[in-house]
Length: 383
Image (cartoon, rainbow, N blue to C red):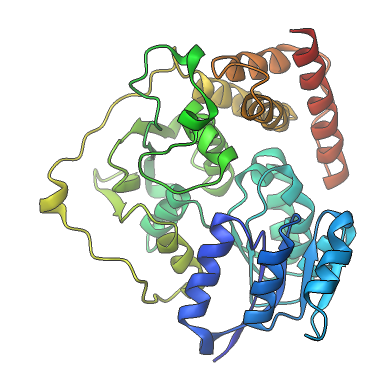
C-alpha cells in the first residue's frame, strides 16, 4: 500500500538520505511536500524526480528562482515561514522533520497538530519546547518516532519492554574528532566538522566536537523516555557501533548495534512497526575487533554538564542553552570566536539571571529563543 510522506529539510543530510530510501522503494511512497532553506536547484530537482505536490523555501528571496526551476512541472512553489508551516500541516502518513535548529520548531509543531506520525530528526525543537511539544503530541494524537541514531536505538531497545522496568538508559557518544586534541583553543572549523564516523552538516558536526550534541540528546531523551534524568547516562564509544543501551531492573541490558549511517535509523522510522531493506552491509564484528568505552571528560568538554544542569533547572533553561549554542556555533564557523569559547559563551548566557518565564506555548518558546539569541549576540560583541 502506497503511503504519503513530507520531508521538512529535504536538502540536508537526513533529508537526502530519506529520499535515497524512498527512491529505492518508489512503489511504497508518494511525496507530498519537500522543503529547504534556499537550496533551489537541489530542492527543485528532488521535487521533479519524486513528483511532489509542493516545494517550499524558507527564504522568501528564493521564491522567484524556485518558480522558474519548477516551471511547467505542475508542482506548487511557495516561500516563507507561514508557507513552511502550511506545507507541514498537509495530512500525510509520515512527516520527516529534519530542519536544523530552532527554525524547525514551527513546521514540526504544525505537523504534530495534524495528528500524524512524525519522524523527528530535529533535536533542537524538542530541547527548546519539550513540554509544549509532548503536550501537543498527546493532545492531537500524534506519534513521535526518533530519527537520531541514539534515540532510535533506545526506541528499538524499548520495544516489548515497559518504561517502568527500566533501570537506566545509556547514550553513546563517539567523542567527535577532537577527543585526543590537547589544545582546543587552536581548533579550526575544518577540524571540528571532520567527524571520524558520521557524515553530517556543519552545525551538528561542531556540536559533536563540543559534545553539545550529546547534551542536547540527553535533554531530548529526558522528554522522549521519561525515566528520570538521574537514570540517563552518557558514555564515550569511539567506534560508534553501539548506538545506545537500555538496562532493565532484572539486570538485562539491551543494545542496538549498526553501521554509522543515518539510513539505518531513518529506515526504522519509515517502516515502523515493520522493517525494510537498506543498502547497508551487515556488521562484521570480527573485522571491527574491539569496542571501547570511556567516561566523558566534562572538564575539557563541559557541554554535557551544562545540558544536564539546564535540564535539571527546567523551565526556559534548555531553550536558553540551545539558542546560545546556535549563536556560538555560528560565530565559531565564521571564525569570530575560538572553539574553546563556545561552551564559555553558553555558560555565561545560562548564568545570566534575566531569563523569560518557562514557556507554555509555541509563541513563548520563540520569545525565549529570540531573547536568548539577542543576549548571546550581545555577549559576543562585548567579548
